[in-house]
Image (cartoon, rainbow, N blue to C red; front, side, top):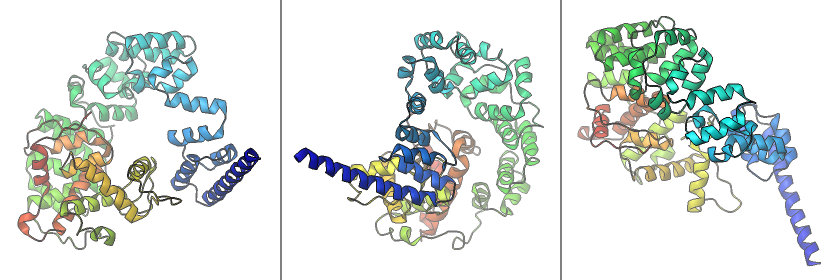
Length: 479
């Protein structure tokens, strides 16, 4: 009798959960197709939902990413689908011990470039006959001198390998001057060549490769390529060639931000005040135009420029000026103060925090109340988790730029560089290329908010003072 009662109890609980998830799923169906609905489907699939709900959710998904697919596969309860998901998420060690189909699914070029010689041999034996294209990629990456194999590949195969190996492999094995015939072959595909330059010219450890690229014809290349070619020529003090590339870049854009970027660098290498005046007359306030404002010590009315949020201002009694400025500048550059923002990677809220980070902090500190879910889009909840995250970061890093980088979960090394008229600007353009524009504007807004919160002139800061603090001492982030 006792077992029957227990069975009935679990059956009732199970049915209650199913009804709860069904109601939640019906609510999700009402959300307009897009990132928001994808996010809520992903959150639902993390729960103990039925395979029927998982299957039905598939038709509602707008943009399938790896996380969403893996959560779907776990709940759909279909052997082949789950096997694909497992292969995609499997470690290299586990992949080696599996079968050819799974190896090809799970072993992308980045993972491939981390294999040892023994691991290469084991994988070759399994995929050689069934997947000739994959085997060819293996032969290039596992060759005694991979570069000599790389340059003999067809154009598409060259790009597939070069663009997708990990950075360390590229630096170790592909840092050679590009032969003329190889250059002419890959230069045909301008779109891929732009990607090639964006990787190569932003990596100082590819100096030999880059030395063969610094005077190429950029007529058919995009703005970014022309700009990076200009920047790379500055690094070798070839200012005349840099001037040519920067002016070519100007002809390829109507974006005020990009125009300001070029005017900033033209001023840096020529000291011609025409470019400085162009920046001062820009109709957009950004990192580059604000640098010009600092150079001429021009006053600006901060009152009309800066958004103020009562929930952040109310923390001034609890936190110092630095923290309030950090919160404002992060919220501004990450979401433009949009409480409901969701990124394609499912970062959420005004500070674009990762859901896993929020859940981890919540579990660690027992912040989630019984039967009460965390509201990822509530500003006070966002502030609470952002402050905990920042406090943890500030145990190691004090400079606001470093805090903002680690806030995103990014790890990057700032090599010791000498502060001068061109540095750290060159390094900022190259080291932070993945989220460069956000970080540069973060710095500008940090200065603006900090100064708006500071009454005494002697306590106000500048971009230059942040850079000086960054350089002494250098804080190195672990690779």
